[in-house]
Length: 340
Image: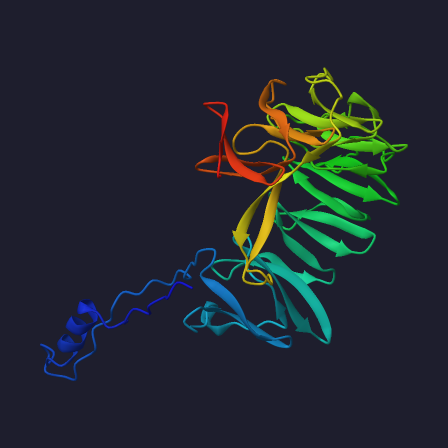
C-alpha cells in the first residue's frame, strides 16, 4: 500500500498573513487581519485516492491516511469509485434514494432516484433491478427505458440487453437494433462483430444487427486480431470476419490465456482477468489428438504439434513438455531447449 503523506496547511503565505495581522493599522484603530485568498472550488481526487469508511447507515469517503473527503459528507450507503464515479444512497423520509457522485463530491446523477443505480459503463449508468433495468446517460437522462433484464454491457452506444429469456441490441436512442431472438450474446469485439446464439448454434452480427456469419457453429469465441475460434461438431478451427476458414477444423481443444493481476481479496492474492484466444506471443494454442501446438492468426503453424504439454511463455520461450521432459520452445529459432 502506498503511504500518503498529509501536507501541512501552514505555508509561507500563511506565515506572512499572520505577521501582518500583528502590525497596527495606519489609522491607529484596531488592526483587521489580512484575508488570504482561498479557493472555493471543491477538492478533486484521483481514482484510487479514496476508500469507503463506516458501515451502512453512515458511510463516507476517506483517504488511506484517514482524512475524510468532501467536507465529511455522509451517506446511508456508498460504493467505491470506479472510473471516477461512485453510486451512493441517502435516506430521505424513510426511503432510500440513489444517485452518483464524482471525484469532487458533486452529484452527477442527483440523489433522488428510488431505483438502484449501478457503476459507470462507457458513458452510462445502469438503473433498476431484476427484470426492470435501463440506462441513464451522464446527465441523468433516462435513455434506455427500464424494460429490460440483464445486460452484457455498453459498446460505443450499443446496449446488449435481455428481454424475457432472449438477448438483443438497443441503441442510445432507445431503438431496438435487433429482434430479441437470441438465446445468448457476448459483447462486441474490436471489429464490430458480436457472437450470438440461436437454436443452439452460434454466429455473428454486426453493429446494424445484420447476421453476417450465420448461426451454424456449435460454439464460437469473440474475435481477436481478426479471427475467432469456432467449432463444427467436435472439432475447432479459426475463422475470419468473412466466415472464411483460416485453418481446417482439425483441433480437439484450445486454451485461453489469462493475465494474473494482484487481488487482495483473493485467497491466493491474485486473480485471472482478460481471457484471450491469442497469446501475447501472437499465437493460439490447440490440441490435435494427444499433442499440443500453436498457430498464428494467418493459420501458420508456429509451434509444431509435438508436445503433450504446453504452458505459459516467459523470457526464455514457451514452456513445453514431452513425457517427463520439460523445456522451452524458442519461437525465433524454432527449437526446444530441454532442461535435462
